Every structure is written in C-alpha cells, then in structure tokens.
Amino acid sequence: MSGFNSGVSRRHLLQGAGAMWLLSVSQVGLAASGQVIAVRVWPASTYTRVTIESNRVLKYRQFALSNPERVVVDIEGINLNAVLKGLGNQIRSDDPFIQSARVGQFDPNTVRMVFELKQNVSPQLFALAPVAEFKERLVMDLYPANGNHAEDPLLALLEDYNKGELEQKTPSGGPQPGKAGRDRPIVIMIDPGHGGEDPGAIGKYKTREKDVVLQIARRLRALIEKKNNMKVFMTRNEDVFIPLKVRVAKAQKQRADLFVSIHADAFTNRAARGSSVFALSTKGATSTAAKYLAQTQNAADLIGGVSKSGDRYLDHTMFDMVQSLTITDSLKFGKEVLKRLGGVNKLHKNSVDQAGFAVLKAPEIPSILVETAFISNVEEERKLRTAAFQQQVAESILAGIEAYFADDARMARRG
Image (cartoon, rainbow, N blue to C red; front, side):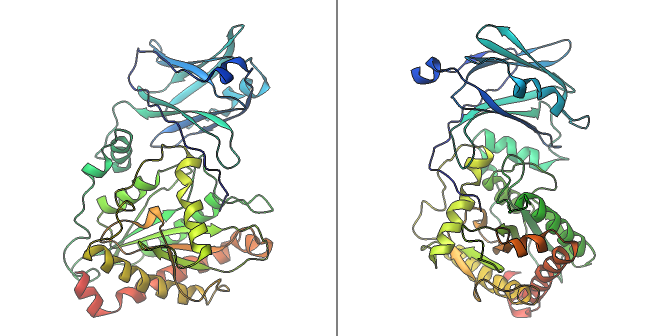
C-alpha cells in the first residue's frame, strides 16, 4: 500500500452551467508564484477526471460556454509552461465527454483551459491537500448532465454520493431471500482496489497495484460467469477512481451474497512476502500490520480525491447482531479463501486478520480483502505480472467461494 500523509482534503463542489465561482486561498498561496508540475486526464464511461497538480494552492474560476459546449477553467497566479501545454495531447479519442482541450496565457497572471465537450456535462471542481506523493491538486470531474441511471447504476450511486445522499438512498435489506445457489444464483461483488488517480502500491519495476488487481478481478469474473449458480458484478471494470463508500453501496444495491476486494500489498521492507486475507473488525485490529494496512487502505479516498467524511458504522462502538453475524461469516469465508491461496503462494499469515477496513462494511454481506501478494517484493512483483499467477489467484478465490457455500447449514441460515 502507498504511504500517506495526514492532510485533510478540501472539497468544494461546483455544479450547474453558466455560473461562475471564485475560490479564495490563503495569502501565502496568493503571494507565491504557482507552478503546475503535472496534468493528468482519466477518461471513463461513468465520468472523466482532469487533475492539475501544483506546488501551490491554486486560485481558480470555472464557467460554461455554448455553441459549441465548453467548460472553461481560469487559473490565476501561474504562467503557461510545458506541462500545461501538453494537456491537449492527453485527451483520448475515446473519451466520452471531452472532444478536445486547449490551454493559453489569458493575461499575464492567468492561464485559461478550455475543454470542448462531446455532450452536456455537470462539472464538479474541488481542491485536494497534499497526500502521499501528491502535492496540491485541482480536480475537475465531468459527469453526464443527463445520465441514464437505469443503464448505469454506478452513475446513480456517484450522484447520490456527490449530493451527500448515498447513505439515505442505499438499500439495507441484504442479499435476496432464498438459498443462494439453490433457489437463486449466488451474487458475487468483486472489488478491484484503487484505480484512476489512485495507483495503489507500485513495485520496483513500476508495476501498479491498480492494474494487476483489475486483471485478476477480470479473470475471477470470467470464472464465475461459467458457473450456472452464480452471478457476478464488479465495482469497477476500467481505470477509474470509485470512492470506498460507493463500492460498498454498489454491493448493497446488487444485493450481493459475498464481497471480495482484491489488492497487492506493499511494505517498506522488500523481503516481506506472501498472501493474506482480511476481514472487518469493530473492536480494533488483530495485529499492528492489519491496523497499518487498514489505515493505508482507508486513505484511498484522500489519494483518489474525495472529501473524507464521517462514517456511520465506525462511529459506533458496537454493531448490532446482524453485523456481528456478518463478521463471523466473513471470517469463515476468508478462511476458505486463505486455505486455497496457500496452495499457490506462501502465506504471510496462517489466519484471517482483522481491522477497520472501510470497504468491508456492508451490513449483511460477508466481505473479505485479499492481499494477493507483496508488490513491493521483487519476486512476487514478477509473479503478479504473469497470467499464470493471476489465474491461479482467481481460481483460488473461486474455490474458496464454492467451499464457503458448500455447507448446507450455513446456506440455510443465510437464506
């Protein structure tokens, strides 16, 4: 996992077209001459993100123009440099939202960015404080102004999240009634960790965690799709950042029976190796390593770029009976997966560890986090890049899923 600083994100959502906002910054930020050090564009089917990274807090304003449809962002206190000039080259032809982008020196103190659009969008701009390897960031997310929520439930969840309405609108009924695997298909939600602006851990040979876990997740999905008694969904199937709460909400919306979050661990000591499985704990971590891992995993929203808000589950010291039973089932499920992972890789620990992982908190859905291997270990990084090892990990997870549901008594209780 990538390390992180304790900076608090600053998020100001700017919505609607034809209006203008001016955000104030500190006097220090105004006095200093800012320099843009990186520009990144992350196109995805749900939304496109543009990130401007600077050595100073940026003062900016945003407005919309028509005929053709454009989003304009003025950044004050900076000069046009080679990094900003390269923005246009980062716009991909398959970007669903941005047709083209151009940048120019609007006046001696202002750089203007103009984004020509392929469709009407709802832009959301916000600033992020430094965290991990990132410095000050200005983020612009472009969502479709008239999205089809029926065809894209993730879009609806993201909209609820951005409005602060996710928890009120997320169903809490748990899995569908009936015996999973007998009366109805077993519903599995696969969660490839990180994505988009958040690369996750990066190995010595530049292997990115977000890439290998997506590849493993796709392999697992393909295996599950061959099973007549199972149905599978993914929290993401492209290189896009999805907030942790939205991942949980998607599992709840699809009424999943199981939730599997896939990751590739990292540690400061490159000798650390082995596969691990984790479950939620509401009473503190079962080890120092698990506590550290949960802290770094829960920082994904800071790194990927959202506001860090309170959590209704971790704010309580005791869970109700349903949550306690869910954690018990999560441990049983994790044990089955861990046992099979031990057949394809050394185990870092022979038991399921626990900590307060934000992504594992869907009530009534047994949830585990699988650390497939240490991407910081050179040997395991090489393995993670191979199709053979990725397939073995996927097969191990599926075998654990099948073993978990093989117990008729447990199936009856959860049905």
